Amino acid sequence: MKLAFALQRITRGLFLLGGLSFACTLVQGHDGRMQGGNEPSPLVIGHRGGGSGYLPEHTLEAYALGIELGADYVEPDLVATRDGHLIARHEPNLIATTNVSKLPQFANRLRTVVLDGIPTEGFWASDFTLAEIKQLGAVQPVAERGQQFDGRFKIPTLEEIIDFVKRKSREKDRQIGIYPETKHPTYHQSIGLALEDRLLRVLTRAGWNHRHAPVIIQSFETANLKYLNKRTSLRLVQLVDADDIAADGTITYAPPFDKPYDWVVSGRAGTFGDLVTPAGLAEVRTYADGIGPWKYYLQTTACKTLDATGTKCADANGDGLVNEADRVVVKPGQPSKVIQDAHARGLIVHTWTFRNERSRQPLDDGNNPVNEYLRFFELGVDGVFSDFADTAVAARVMFKLKNDPGYARCLVHDNGCTDRD
Image (cartoon, rainbow, N blue to C red; front, top):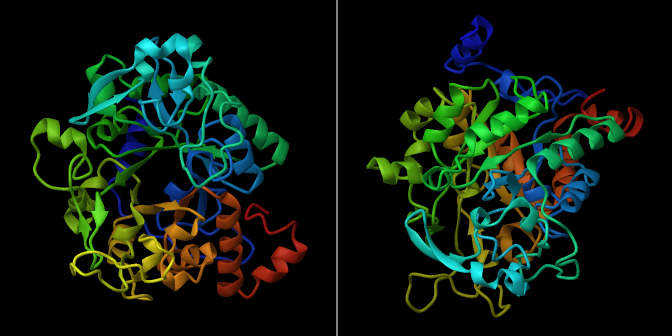
């Protein structure tokens, strides 16, 4: 191992201090290495592209829209084809995000696979060559969003995404990054299509396999991040999932969202929640640079009123539905211990997922999705994953206007206050 690389790995175990600065310059994260030398903060990460609230996700068109709307990074979820190519899909099962079920030439590919312990019927990327994948069209998987572009846009490879992002960075004269997620790494390893080395090979060929590359790799599993930690100096983020939130705001766990699946295979006890305890964060710090917790770990919500059973939310807003819009924030304004503990250990906190639909917003936010971002920015998160990058960017500007007296001058007079001037 080269000395420089060894030193980069050693520094992952150090607790680094950082601060906040809004005055028309970059806002540094709590670990200056993690946030990078020329990156804005809070970071706006285009979830599944950042234009995915408007267009079918994980397409070049959704990434392009996310960039137009101001995303700093775009997020490609990665799965493998039968011939070993990495493509951008939210799941290895293509049934919900493509038109594959409507194409007669692939009707015989429908089968049931055990994914993370759960038998699941669908069409699996690993049963298709890249040439066959290119025959599919992406569709909008969220029913309440527009379906008018279904089938029009193709599924990109990781190489195509990198080339596209590099070109957009030149055109926009700003650095845009990628935030790839290795999807179901244990599953891909079990079928002989492990993602990690494939990902590093593509990044190396692109010149993006080094500490200062605009790349952050994320995963819900731990073993593959530990593997990557020994083989690259790229920034790594441990995602933290859960199953649901109870009526009182307590986070609940149930398979397959109870623990990292590599823990299931190895027999390790515990839940995802263990990763955000002080001991869990200290462990994460030995192999990763940040955490990506579900936002309810940072600030949860509870039912405003309960139904007749006393165990579930009632329709508090009277719209005939029961969803997040019938809940209220628990202890608003109270600091987040998870964020405080993570920052104390030199870990950046990027949380997910932010969406514009009213059904996704608690009553406190008053039908304005910007208010949700502002709540989490005030808590001190270092970045957010958003389906609607424009809303996230608007909220970031408002947050800076509120917290930095000099930001208004910067916004008006200094090239739009790009955080890079």
